[in-house]
Image (cartoon, rainbow, N blue to C red; front, side):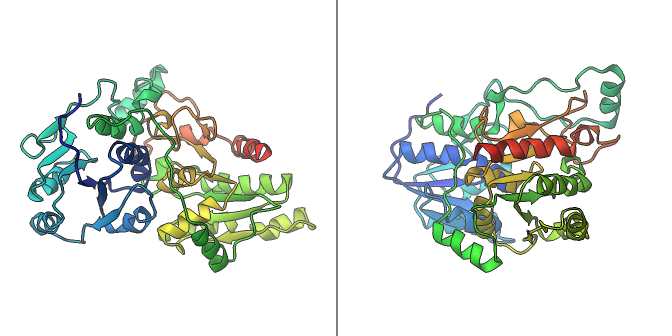
Length: 380
């Protein structure tokens, strides 16, 4: 379906609210820019993502939704911009209501969620959309007992990248997928390296470690396993480690690093452990810059993992409750990254917590993860 809409001069894109989802929308924004090269594209977003969006080449202006701002107040601010066209990337009722209050003539988004009278150009969902169904504890127990998969198999065509590209295709844009991409200025990388005293990128490889995950424990590979991966990789070759995380991950990072340098020094006296702890210390643009400075990132399925892939850093990800074909970082089907899974019949369950024994993640060994990272490093 292609909507008959006059070529716009000013486009408003209502962005998504989470970092990982934001990265997955970048191919769609690139296609939108290709379709309307002369239009001014503004992106409406929550404040926490605004600094990063200001670095994206396809966005001319970033408009922040102020904390606690009412829809009527936001609509009034948006009306001052005289937008011709608005695109709602999220599927929520509220995001469509924001565009309606802004009185933008052409409002495009997916149908559903009572948005019929808010969007005047509604697109039906693609027929091969995968419905993420969170399994109940009873469904998980039944899958374990019978050995039959509790969820249908996820095809790469169901990846969320295609969800956003399909919206742009309704405006005449090219629907072919692209690698999610965020170009980080060299000056920002240099400033970040200097500010945090990060090592030079050569000659020793730099390995990023990101052991947190906000969604819940069902996305967190055991912290002890990250610690063991650091030990294995250090024994294999001279390398440097950067530990990432948010303010809530300080305890996790401490679990990985506590006494590890001393233990390693006893084992390999000639090669001490070199690591830099950035957990809770970086802004979002600085996080992107530091991720781009790594040769590989070993991480849970999180927003920073998507960001690392988008800034050009290969990632190694143990997947548990979520699905790599559905929301994995990078271009669907790419061989650049390593997504590691086990095969319990209850995975993916899409739960934030596990009602049994987290076997989906516990069955992925540190040696397997270390081997995947070594494979990437050998190819560099």
